[in-house]
Image (cartoon, helix red, strand yellow):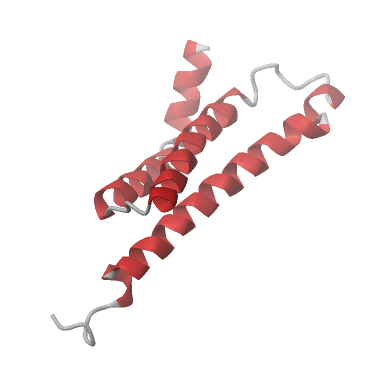
Length: 109
């Protein structure tokens, strides 16, 4: 396939953009999951269970690792489709298997 006919997605520039999107999504998830903790929403509702946000924090920690790996690959300029697709798979697994992860976290912690 020549360069003119090749899709932008499968070029090094597309890999760079995809890795940045993964990093932005991971950062967004971390920020939105920590805001209730910082604003004191947990303390304002006495009927809320203490471990309600534990699965959210656990998945935020997974997203922090995803963010760390994606930023490291961007900073070192050593992007790989294997790493980026693995990070996307981790994010999708967290998204689609949230209830199973939450049940495991509730049972473990």
